[in-house]
Amino acid sequence: MYRLIRSRCLPALLLACTLSLPVSAQQYLPTAELRGAWIATVVNIDWPSAPGLSTERQQMEFDSILDVLKAMGMNAVFVQVRPAGDALYHSAVVPWSRYLTGQQGLAPEPFYDPLEYMVKAAHARHMEFHAWMNPYRATFDLDTASLAPNHPLRALPDKRKSEWFFRYGRRWYFNPASPLVRQHLINVVKEIVVKYDVDGIHFDDYFYPYKEANEPLQDYNYYAADPRGFTVIEDWRRDNVDRLIEGVSKMIKSLKPYVRFGVSPFGVWRNAGQDPLNGSQTRAGITCYDDLYADVVKWMKNGWVDYLAPQLYWSIGFPPADYEILLDWWSRHTYGKHLYAGHAAYKINNFPADPNWVKPDEINRQIAMNRSNGLVQGSIFFSVKPLLRNPLGVQDSLIGTLFPNQARVPGMEWLSKSPPATPQICRVGGSLSSVKLAWHACDIGSRDENPYYFAIYRFDGQSVGDFQNPRHLLAFTPFNTEKWIFEDPTAAAGEYYTYVVIAYNRFNVESYSSDPVVVKKTKTKAKRKKKLFGFLF
Image (cartoon, rainbow, N blue to C red; front, side):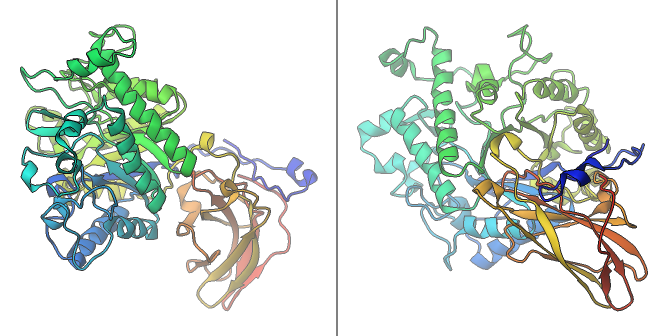
């Protein structure tokens, strides 16, 4: 595969004089691949380790989690900031979570804003932060007496409560049929989008509740009062959820188009037994479409979500729901959007019902399938705690085999109106121990053209080599860095190197490459060669 190093500042003559390199037979690890983990806060699954910890302890635990994930090659975290009608952030409309402080409505002491802290901590490690929210779950149990006074289930008048909420099983839920609920939930998401520098808003698989045995949903009166032309209540329920997803999507894009909106649905949309034409060859007892009333395929087709991360929590070859079959099915229903596979880290060596989970190479094989598929852009693991325990050496595999190289989150070109401005290396310096580079970018005419971070590539010798080979990627700069400089301490005296810088915007869309710069490292400094002929990728 050949690629021209493109620069808006290069004369047409030089652009026409590109050279070619033979394609290497080696298959490199991807340099653009989402590698993420879900960090669950409900009942303190992952973080904080217990409610009521000190501010210092909470921050220390979160930093430790990020450091370990970073060492595993991760570049994104999906942190549950709304587990059950509450907030792990300073909100004007939602009470503080009891999983943070031990009592709903009670702020951390000493005071800090966990979401603000977590976003900054992730970005400092060049990791994206996606705010994971459960939209409809109002409580995690039936103990309404312990709810904060500003929780709508306590604050609203009784008549309004009956419109906003319904009880099902052992929990209370927001009513998807209520336009007032829908607007409230949109406002909850809006607060995060406006106040915090998140990279994405992420909904999980809980829309209408998972079904309880012999307990039908009690929403027939709402349906009869306003069927909206639907003759089947199941279609009406799906439309209720559709309206929320569309509303959240339009709100996000109107405020910050670069904030991505994604969903991690249950791993089976429909079985072929329910839908012979469109369903997957599975025998799942629950499906997105028929049981949770979430038509996620429609959301992708309509462009309401930017990515899906289906929870493919089964092994390769598991008869009722085979990972390989489901990965193929989802990859054929992306409509040009991104697909990230959800992996069941919690099942590794911990799921007797399926002996495949005692195989040390199960996750390795799943990620190999992702990469060979061609339409899968990455992986997300549920959840952090199993990864930290390292069952069957999965953490070792991630560090040493699966994610040993640096990788950025793949770009979403359809969201970006233009690529970022082209960087150009303007200064080269050196010392006894390093080569120093500085660059600039001109003609920044829009927000999309503003560089958000940079990649620095180095090639041995006096020509540009294969950008797909991860050994040539020296580093990514921090997000939104003010200093456009880089110091390379690994350059050896007496050697020639060719450096190239590429910019990325908030959509992770890449710029044209900078003009290559050839540098000779001497014992005391670095010398820049004046001109380079031949621009190769």
